Image 1 (spheres, rainbow, N blue to C red):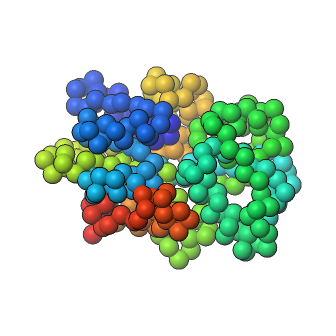
Image 2: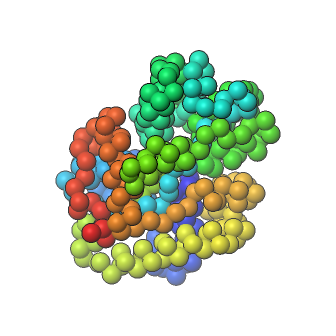
Length: 289
């Protein structure tokens, strides 16, 4: 998915050099057990899952960078949707009840409902198991409304020209966070603290390479799209290239802490379980002062 895209140049160059061994998984749960059992040293996982893991391991992981911001878009061919209040009476298809897309959408609906005078209950949320299932619904019925991450949003719009982005959830989040440095954070990079304590220089070297890889991915979209297809993240180069700008960031240090801590606070207010029951301490944020 989008979390891996900023790493593709590292995966191509550093794996061949023997510097790293990379494992990609379809779901974060597949990686967490390997972090706990010390089979993995560094992992790129959803932001709230990193907080949950911090709580479960009693603070034995640290977040070292943000690798993906909000890759969520609301897609529809329904031209009557111009504001959030226009969603009243409609059904929005999304994946994962109790996951990040669900929490983010519920937050935005609640905030806009209080501003625009409608009830969040006026909007029906219908959950599907996979993003591809939502893309298929939108392909057949462009008047439907779907919440999709990249690259699925780009794939859906390429399958039916009537579809367009109704709301970019990152932009919508930022509009509401006028007094906060909070950002809509999708993916972060964590490290086991045991590995960090033993090999701080290797963690710093990884961060340098990660930043270089993310920068190169944006500067060389054609080569990056080819690597994305080669690694099996996305099937077609044109879609990979189009989705690229929405998928990659590299944020560390104090900016990372401000963006992520504010995001986790919003999730905590909605459901403490979404971040592991309580908010992480300052030790969670590597490199922040």
